[in-house]
Length: 301
Image 1 (spheres, rainbow, N blue to C red):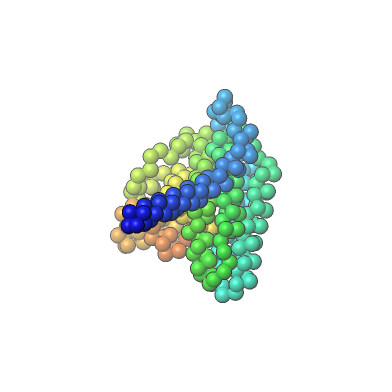
Image 2: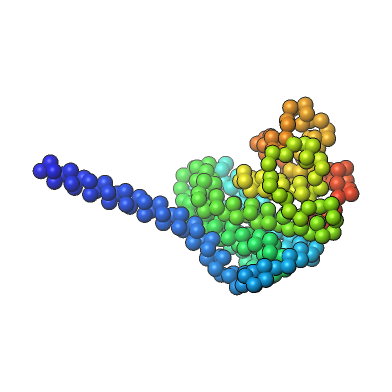
């Protein structure tokens, strides 16, 4: 009897482990499938890549079109998402919580439709990739809002939503798209100003001496890369962080706080919520009047 019970227990344990492994695999497959469906839907847009690998025109009109047709709808979504999740974290009304989750899904779907209306950036592969990454991001955000239960305290729902693998992946694709966009600006800048590099290059710890020598477009690209690597999915843009870092350096604040490099400065700013939307505009004339910039609204508003 003892042998039979041991065999039964072993089979039960093996079956349970198999179930857990299958469930775990299915979950992560779901995240991948959600993104892959979007990529497959727009596979025809990448058909030229295999034969052309694009000349990489990166004209200002490409950047302007991308800004209005792709980046701006996503930027609006990002601001609304962060605001609604923050509101959710402070809510005690279960009906309101359910409505917020539903509205987040509707908003993601609405902005998805806006992004797909136009824009095929066949001459600028980074913009093309950015558009696909934003579509993947919105798809996963929509799915994330539908997965989370509206029961319980708002703070718990918000925590569950922020920690959900679909949400984490959605934010990652959004930050990758942002990096694609800022790398595209760098390529544009290199075409109109020979002192601007076409690529960011390997990003290591940046001393303030190195940072001061970099043109604004390169600084912004570096910040977008750090935001991606550190999963900083916030309402402000890379140039807002750039401006805050420059002001800390030139005002002497960074030195008084014994900060030694750009990364430590950025850590302090983001961890203390010291960066706000449109901070760049506060110091535009003071620090960047002679910088080469594309004619995009968030550089000129």
